[in-house]
Amino acid sequence: MIIAIDLDGVIADSLGKFIEFHNDVFNTSLKVADFTSYTLNESIGMPRKEEIKHIEMFDDSNYFNEIKPLKEAPSAILDLSSSHKLAIVTGRNEGQKEKTLLWIKKYVPQIKEIFFIRKSVRDNSKSKAEICKEIQADILIEDNLKYAQQVAQAGIKVLLFDYPWNQSSNLNPLIIRVCGWKEALNFINSLKIK
Image (cartoon, rainbow, N blue to C red; front, side):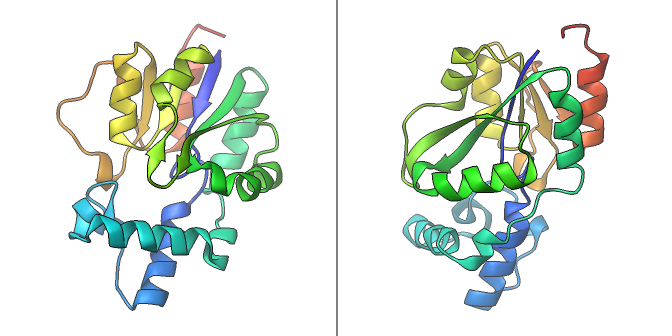
């Protein structure tokens, strides 16, 4: 089976490090529960221009360089790589490519194919749905509801990591909500497709 996997929020604990950065640099008291949407704009009302500036500052900071994987991610990736073809399809932009490739090599070296959907923080070059179709992915593992919906509309099954920012009562039937890597692995292992 070909499994496409998002990076931030699925393999990498980027939000945890971003919250630490934001609280330290801007003297805020953000926590994961505050992110009821995928953006600061929608979650706390931060103007979009200011949000982009904060994200760019984070990307250039040492905090970004200190992102660690989610607890169960490396062992889950190792497990999946023994039976499936894996590819990362990330919303990170190409300006982060060098740092991202080094991070992947350090924490999840089993994944050799990496696709970036953005040229910059401000624009996409391709959608995750387009890339998932091109690589003939059977499943996408994701945390962003918008991307999950686009990929499901393209006819590809999505395992959606359950977070405060991706809640919806109206999910496409191809989107299956999972609480982390253990449930994702159980679901994938239950499928007959190899």
